Length: 144
Image 1 (tube, rainbow, N blue to C red):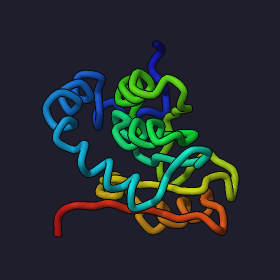
Image 2: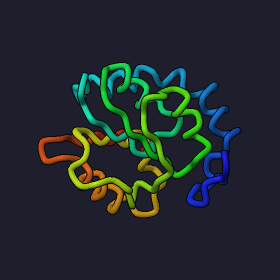
Image 3: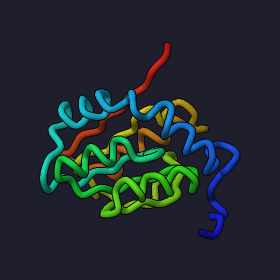
């Protein structure tokens, strides 16, 4: 796969993605399940997993029957997400400048991905823009 010029490999290289996947992702299954349950994602739901990383939330949503779209600033982690959810659509994108149409998703999820965007205010505005009026936004963060 050719390097994506928009990707920032210093943030998440292919190797970092694999380390995250093997060391940390397995213990996050209950969190991902709780996100899917709390948002009532099910068959036919159109979701955006913004800052999807290796696709943990995307995989849980796909298993629940959702149509999955995911984005991340790093092409390296998207390799892992695509492997987990071959039916999903994944692309390199910054959460603060999403490449999706207005009102495109039923649910927009940012799970641990608003920790580092340069402009969290823009990121939240973008999540609102791409989520339809009857939809919902789920933001999960950790730390103080």
